[in-house]
Amino acid sequence: MSPPDLESPTVGPRWGVVLVGAGLGFVVGELVATVLAAVGVSLAHYPGGLSSLARATQAPWWFSAVSLAGLWVGFGLAARVARTRGHLAPLAEQWRVRLADLRFVVLGVALQFAVNLAYAPWHVQHLNQPANRLLGGASGLGGALIVGMTLLGAPIMEEVFFRGVIFRGLAGLVRAPQRGVRMWAAAVVSGLLFALAHGEPVQFAGLAAVGVVLAVLVARTQRLTPSVITHASFNAVALAALYASRGH
Image 1 (spheres, rainbow, N blue to C red):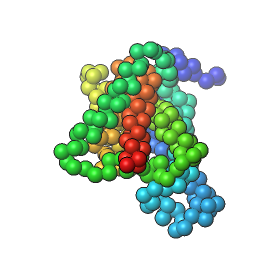
Image 2 (image 1 turned 180 degrees about the vertical axis):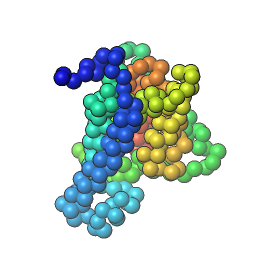
Image 3 (image 1 turned 90 degrees about the vertical axis):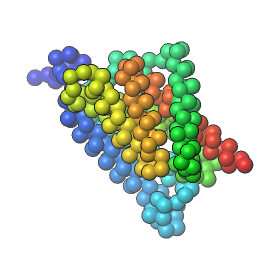
């Protein structure tokens, strides 16, 4: 018997499988990242080993690179499981680019400033600490690689995983009489998971809010391109602020 046509409307997505695949992919990504980091520590003879490296305020650029790459392996696995086992077909025009998408560059910048303004009354310090730790003391080719991964790789892979798989899986799993209720419930939960996955307690609320906005973009446009552009623009402002602070 030939396998079912995943594009056929008679084959519905298996939402539970999609979400289990997402969880599996995240765990696998963390494991791959840890293994790659351990290999790097061994090759570089890093003092204090992996535990010391994980606590470092400014880790070497290669640690950031292999950590991101390892995690993305898991994200790719999750997307594949969602596609093949969960019968989750890609959005019809998910990577289509339109001239009007330039407005999402502005949205990403606005989101970064909105998050900073929201934190301002609380006098929160070190909002740029995640970017600082990611970039570390990298310069030259190493610095260029991390910047490229932050501005291009991370937005693409995280949007594929968190919005393309998790958000859509949650939206299909939630039972509510109105489509709008399902969308917002899935957007909020996926936003919380997005923030939790970054492991940054101070930035948790801001990242969760951004995750909700990105999910809503995908729901409204039925494409991943707008959320990727917004995400990339958001990251770009954080990197620019970090470089500006280092310049002083």
